[in-house]
Amino acid sequence: MAFAPRMESRIQGFSVIGGLKGHVWDGVVADLWDVACGEKAEGYYVSPDPRLFVALDVDGDGAFFVEGARGELRRHDQAFSMAYIPAGVPIRGRVEGLRRIRHLDLHFDEAALTRRFGGSLDRDALHVSRFQFRDDRIAMLAGLIAAECDSGQPMHDLYGEGLLNALFAGLFEIGQPGGQRRRTPLSRRKLRLVTDYIDEHCLGKIRLADLAALTGLSETAISHAFKAATGIPPHRWQMQARVRKIQTMMVRDSASLGDIAEATGFFDQAHLTRVFKSIVGLTPGAWMVAHRRQ
Image 1 (tube, one colour):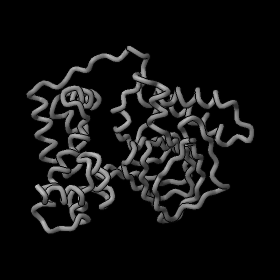
Image 2 (image 1 turned 180 degrees about the vertical axis):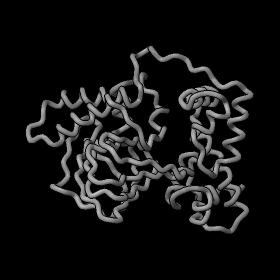
Image 3 (image 1 turned 60 degrees about the vertical axis):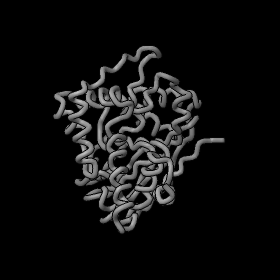
C-alpha cells in the first residue's frame, strides 16, 4: 500500500492557484503549493508523519510565521527558508503582509526512511523540531524536487529517489554506515543542573540555547550529551516532567482537561491527550480510571 499522509488542518484565508501539484515516491509524498494569501490567512496543522516545509517564493513585504506549541515563533520571509516539523507536533501558521507564497511540502514515512538508511539514521533526530533554518544543499535539492512536481514529463523515479536520498542525508546528517562515533554524556553535575532546570520550567518554553548556557556547550553538543546520559532528548524529558505535573493536577484539581491543557502549554485538549498517551501509554481518562482503582 502506498504511503498516504494524514495531516489534520484547519485553514482560512488561503486560496490555491492553478491546483495542487505533486509526486509520490517510496514513502514520500511531495506537494507543491502556490497559494494566494488573504489579509488574515492562518492555519493549524498536525500530522502523525514528519514533514519538511520549504518556501520556494514569497511575494510581499511580510512573512509567513510558524508557531510551535511551546510558543516558538519563526519567520519565513525569503525563498528557501525551511521548517522541519516532527510527527505529532502541532503548529500554527499565519501570514502578515504576503500576497502569495509558493512552497514545497515533503511528507514522509518514518519506516520508509529507516528502510532507506538502516542503522545510519539517528532516529532521535526525527523528533527534533526546527521551525526555521536555511541550508544551501537542501535548498538546491528541494528546488529540483519541486521542478519534478511541476513537470508535465517527470524523469524516471530513480532520479527523484536520488534527490530525496541526498536531501534526507543532509537534513538528518546521515553519514556512512559504521561511521557514527560514541557521544560523550554529560557529567553528573551538569546533568543535575539541566534536569533540575527542565523540571522546574517544564510548563514553559525551554530552548536548547538555555540548556547550552547552563553547561557551556553548544546547542548541538548539549542535545547529544543529554541523550547520551539519559537515553532520551531534552524535549522528551520536558514532556515527561510536564505529564507528571498534569497527573498531579488531574488528581488534586477539579479543572477540566481543556483547562489543564491551556495551563500547561498545550495547544488544546487533543494535543495534551496525544502527548500524554505517548508517554504514559494511556489516555488521560483511562489513566484516571486506573489511578482510582489503585
